[in-house]
Image (cartoon, rainbow, N blue to C red):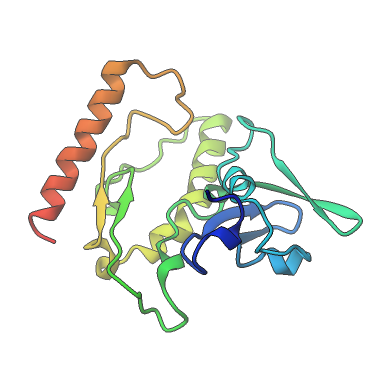
Length: 183
């Protein structure tokens, strides 16, 4: 029975999206007022759609703003791992937060091999997508993150067979069990 943000306790759901028109990251529902939109009446499903609209795979969301519109896509374009969203202005969290990151830890990440223009574009996009989050993931925060190595798979690999899905779930299960032994 959740349709709009007013159906949820205040502050219990926050989604990150990327406003391409204005070149900025937005947190939903917090930033809707800045667009002249009531957060309380805004549909949660639309906010979710805005936050996961992977460019070139899904059509961007057109958000009507006054007499114009704003183009909104996946928040992962600007912050693919927004653990900072759970902190107050002093960097404190209301409760413990555990993150699930679908990659190796930064220390284990191989460098990008750049041999041509396409490699350069992929490396540039990857850096833009991950640099902000990697700066946030310091040794202090890393202890609260479960790193699940999925190097050979991507978020846009929509045609995975059942065996691959099972292998990914097992990687998640194994990484989580290992993490919980020391957390």
